[in-house]
Length: 608
Ligand code: AGP
Image (cartoon, rainbow, N blue to C red; front, side, top):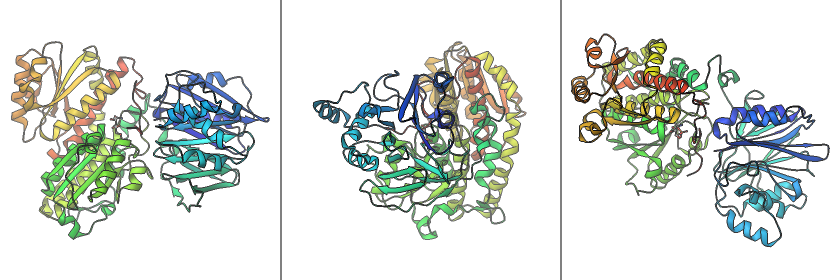
């Protein structure tokens, strides 16, 4: 949950490292630091708070260094202090280290090192690792790192640098992502590709247990036991511009407005309108295997799990296969009943979420078909799943996920259609669904055009301390997602309930101080939802409705209405969720919250 970066080349290292940290800040942002190798010394500069504070500290200091390492932190061990900020040092400052992950056995190692006279100045596990590498250092940084890591239990993505080997950076990975890239005599190491994109699109993703020995002459990859490893160089199709704000005040709003375009990227070339079906090559299953599937499980965390709930409805409705959703951190410990007729989809934007990764491995161990629905190319989940589909949402930098959710839903709709057409969906239904999907981008634009109306509504409701979201059927996961968005960026307490379930408890919460936002669009559950809204109105709660354009009754029933264009019931989450994303965004902005970097959260949760 931290961001690490290393650079060795001919350019001044400081701006490369600081710019890189800014691109990684969404991974963690409570403190940061750099270590620069120049004039026969290693200089460390660290600071608490955002990268701006570090940049302020570096201002006015001349650094000629052309190699260095840097880190932005999301604290796990030790408070948020400058002492605990990375890079950590050993051997009197000659060896420095940045680390993303958790060293589980650091206490035992620390005691051992203290008995040998080592003094730790911070409370972190990482400093212990730096001293452990120092213990084994005998002039060769790579073998010192290898010896030390053989003793480490836990997860890590690290970059180490030693004063006596100025031509070298050594990186290693176990559980936390490491990407290396570069050409000629300029090389970069980072937690993900975004900081490297401005310099090269050619990258190598390290796998668990691999080490990258990087110098100005190139990159050598080997194992912890020093066996050379041949690695595939991936060519990323992201352009740097995609990782910029493009005039929007926040990445979250930019990514909400990216959705009409990225939705098309998600479905392009993956369906056959004439045949009324979908063709997702990554499925990696033949017709017989597809027919053998008698259960589908969607496993994910947070927003990705709510996308999975939409996938469940789609698979049951289109493919007629029993489907369920499991939160990854529960799945791995409940001893799930799984067999070789179970298809498990693991869904993840980052592709690095530890709980989802562990659930993937558990499902594989139990013999299920495991397929990934992932955004980050080359990420661990993508590589460990036995096939799957990239959602092509492009870099998602805001911590609150928006466009990735939409593209996850798009891909699951196509999978459900592919299975459905192989089982029970008629050609006509397939064509109707695909035509409706092709209209989605225009309908998304219609809601985005309502941004000012939604902003005005946010102004009206921003000061309430509580909110209840209601949805029925396929709009229940939409209510869950809307509630999560509001919670995670505005810190307002909100709950989401299936409309019909409200009267079994949550209705007790209702009062004029507890507004309700409900999705009451024109679909098979419209009448049921309307009676639930009547129940809410009877308790005097303020009501915001998401309703279908032209639904005059919605105005009578509510205090405020967000009108959305109609579409097929199954596809409504692709439309309705955007209204809730915009509502949450504007409430948080109006409350002066740091929308892209909400407190206590991180974009990629790489520890359990
Ligand atoms: C969503 O806005 C949050 N950032 C969080 O719930 C997220 O969806 C969850 O951590 C899963 O992340 P992943 O998709 O990268 O696996």
